[in-house]
Length: 433
Image (cartoon, rainbow, N blue to C red):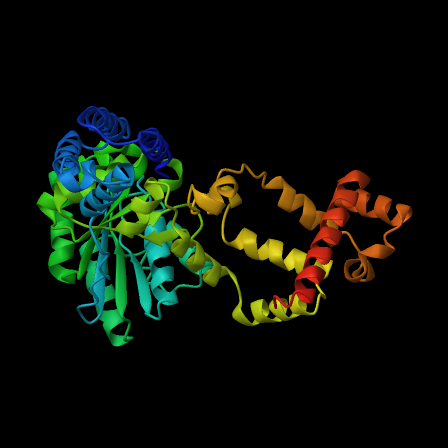
């Protein structure tokens, strides 16, 4: 996400870093390129105009032009302004009510039903008891879709297939959630391919019954400014409290994310970053701004690691490393842990683009390498995993056949494993553990 605008802005600042000092001409050129980069990323033109004007006013101050590092000062100004239009510090969702009701609204095809399940799963991880209520009686199999997803994630839900009135579903679900002491009731409403009076009246009636603590608009980020227009129309009918942008993994521009808060004054709460039920990230403006400007987002990377890695298992692994007892089985566990965190290329994008991480962040790693390595290890016997040195020519041929690889690939893995063992041994000698 944000790749298009990130690459353009990073190039602009790289060019400015090459200047000995920053002149008015440099600033004019840089600001013009920033404006073009934002417009090409499908950011609302009014948002771009205000953004560039504010950056220009601050950048022309004496503290920037007379600074020893004017380009760095300009980066800081742009970062601060990005954070401002993205929404400053993220606020937690309101839990007001008994239970707190989250009403999910949006156009058909925006990923509303999937997002409702993702949100329930995230709330559970945060220690909240959330229950889902499918109330989309219009789209064929919409309620069944939510039920299937909820069951797959082991999430509680109220399924009322006999009830055709969404208002009645909300009323009954609210009474059930209250009697069963749930913290949150998430209601999935019907969407449309377009906005009409009937849809709005239905949502108004549902909101009147539920009195939602949060009315969350689910928007497909890939439709850019159309998402902002749709949110504006929904907001006029049912006041929105937050936005969740879906399909961010497929949107390299990020125009909707950079426009919607400034245009509507409503914060973006989460980003949908994939198809899995766990692919929902809190929207954190300072982190997003850092990612756009190539400063990385290491905190998000750490959070992913905390979700994927079992603490006791990590401590046991650290002890093995200290004793230099790292086996092929341990390598397989490490691969599985990393894969749980998401695609490697996506993880690398969270690293800063400069400094010691520069080359690593720009690496293009083939995911197939991890699949191949796992297949090779899984084709070994228990004894071979613990003592890879016993792998002779005939054993290697058997492993190659079992893993669908080659003896050459097995030899390469063994060399890398030996290098790892040597490195760990050297580190042990230096008392680095």
